[in-house]
Amino acid sequence: MSTVKQLKLYNFRCYESAAINDLSNGLIVLHGKNGVGKTNILEAVSLLSSGRGLRSARVMDIQNTAISRPWAIAGILNTSYGQVRIGTGLDPKSRKGREKRTIRVNGQTLKSQAKLEEYLSCVWLTPQMDRLFMDSGRERRKFIDRMVFTFDSGHSGRVIRYENAMSQRSKLLRDGQNDNNWLSALEQQMAETGIAIAAARLDFCQRLQAANNSKIDKYFPKARIFIKGNIEELLWSMPAIEVEDKFKYELKNSRERDAITGGSVIGPHKSDLSVIYEAKKMRADQCSTGEQKALLIGIILAHTRLIKAERKIPPIILLDEVAAHLDESRRNALYEILNDLSAQCWLTGTDKALFSDIEKSAQFIDAEQIKIQEQKII
Image (cartoon, rainbow, N blue to C red; front, top):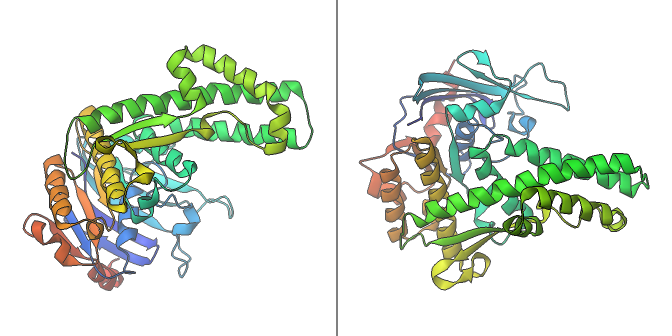
């Protein structure tokens, strides 16, 4: 089990300096009025794992703009490796306009943040994610890709390489530069990375579905989860090498059309995550707001169980303002499930009374007191 035992922030968002010590291994409730920085604390925890955190923020967007010194986060973790110190923040040597994030583990600078997954992984749910099933396909692809990345550290790089190749191809076609060799090389890269992206999504969705099926709960209903897309459909019916050749053929034949429309008419960038409320045989986007929230929580819990099953340790769970949108029965069911997962779980809320049922089992932290005490931290 990996847990954060101490967290320190410097020039991070609304904080100049702040520290939270002696953190619980179980449920942690951050309470306080809106605007005191509860979500910022969750974001800081998420940045101790790989990726861009729960807000997917640019490095400079995290900076406390009232202070010129670079932002930084320092955490002490208890892990299966023993106690680990992780620090991350704005690299003071990075150039303006090309700011970089630096990461250190036990005093050693990491070349790749993917290594952080060895020490800590996080799953999260924020209010911004509540519209996932109503939002664009792009947001759902980002959602599933973040989960895939938890198990496949190369997935993010493949997505970036695919999008870069597609962007370069689009520019060549738009500008009328019909260099066949150059276009063919870009299309080769799109085909290779695109098939790998689609295959990784398919494999992950099957594993996530199995984890979702493993525990039936009336409060967080079973969902049927799958990826829809032309590449995925082909992968179900033929070997990957044949799909790659077909993809390249389609890319070559669609150059004229793609020059007008931009992007590509086919590819994993067109795929979408589909979720069905199994008991009602109803698409998630057609469900009520409460049902959509319950389905989403169910998927996050299934992801947590999958990580725990495959890595033998649960991830840290970050739930921002989740209790306020659940009725009493679902709140109590959620608290019971979280306790059973034996994971460190951070919950935020403006109303402390919403957490009265876990008052004796959870650690409560007044977020306003963190703000008040921050000037005392050196």
